[in-house]
Length: 127
Length: 428
Image 1 (tube, rainbow over the protein chains, first blue to last red):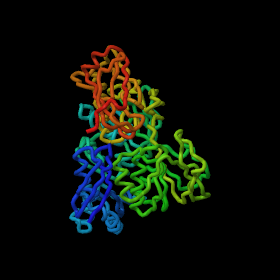
Image 2 (image 1 turned 90 degrees about the vertical axis):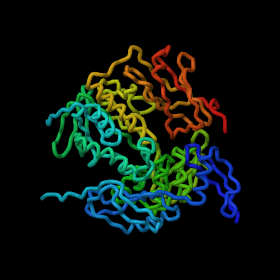
Image 3 (image 1 turned 60 degrees about the horizontal axis):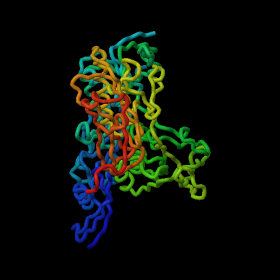
């Protein structure tokens, strides 16, 4: 199987447009990268693009109604939207500490979703 | 009136204020007061839930709240005083601060030194004058960020974003992931204002179109935004009439630039720089008013919070030195002039004598994207220092270390910094 792809390298601000030719899961031609880092990035990005997903989940009784969370490590890019759906079902209870686990091993990626800040509970107003 | 005093008052509890306070404490100043108008510390970082912060300063990739929390924890550990929910109304040249909160009422705080760290705010529709009706649904990208990431509101379902700076790009991804349809990101200029990584990971990843050389020429809708008219622009950035087209949408996010928030600085008599919109400062980030320092986005708008932290530490350290009577003026102050292709330089002058200093880092912005450039310092028409870069763009700040040895040997009291294209390294 033969495939062609153009990948913008993000290893540095230049942003080289790297053209790849891939035959049977092997890179047969690579052009446009100005440094070796570009080659490495293009390979990773072609075969296994991953991203950290930062988002929020709902919180009960917190000083804010949401707490920010992220996947502790990058997860496969195509799972980002599925992970959003999973996280939409979650509601935590304040107080929350930074680093609390929200979902373990989300979508069998081997990656946990963790909170990214402390969130105190709402103080109950007097009178 | 409730009268109080402190040695060092820091106005603003965002990344700049927190780093300045922490550094001043480290240098032996314990009587510090941080004044913050929000209900918590951390500033805008609390709404920047995306990752990518801290790569320079912490050598790890953090989210905004994670970056903030490290400083908040340290401030708490050191027991530095903080007044939250407190709005500063006025700062005088004599370093009196007038502020108000609902517990103590009106406050008069006498400070021996002040660090201004109020940050910046976004330009709004009024600042760029888009014609049309005035319906709900036209807000800045940062406001949308706070609604979505902290307060739990999604501002709309069908979105157009005007401006391709990093906030605009990041909000395109955020709104898409939260289920909104992002119709397009429009950019007036022929290049994006954001970093490449954000173009790739916020737009390309989700097939959100970026349209360069286009702008919104009209806003439609009575109560709620119903559509925007978009046009291509010519080389002078004027809309080309027969290129106009309409996009139906209920929300327009504006990401059209940031302005340092210096109303208080001006009240205090602090002189501002027309190019940065922030105070004119020396290398210690001291303003023209002795004992009043400025750092972070109130001084100039930074691309990375890591640089804000570094700069704020300079200001915090200098404020401590001032309070300990250790700031010494040099005989010949040096003025730094932004030359060809340089938008601005911070600091604008070098006026202090600092023991054991090896260099002064100059920060600047190029006026346009350029390849293979040479950044040089010119003294008396002679190039005394140069640095080559393969690439510069206005969205990314350039730093240039100016060695102390050279500063002491300058022939004139005015040096120019310029960026020239084609003077840099060759390809390969």
